[in-house]
Image (cartoon, rainbow, N blue to C red; front, side, top):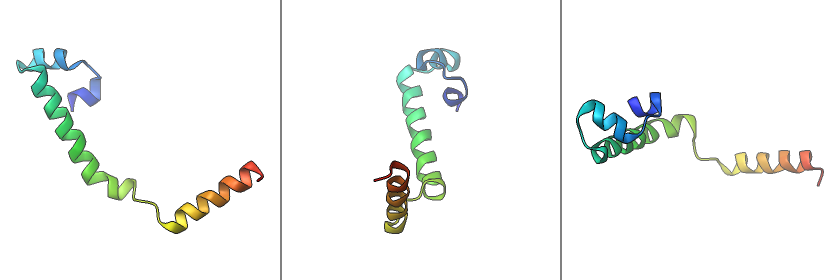
Length: 65
């Protein structure tokens, strides 16, 4: 979570916690993956056929095809 909050390099975070940069990278990957798996269905659900048709219709209207 420190990486997301600060944007510091893995090497800097690793030094702060006395672990290897590879360990930090693995932890960051695991956190991002878990967040995606838990939050994606709620906040970014897969579009339905109806959603895609509506988006295409809006695009067509805006672009005056």
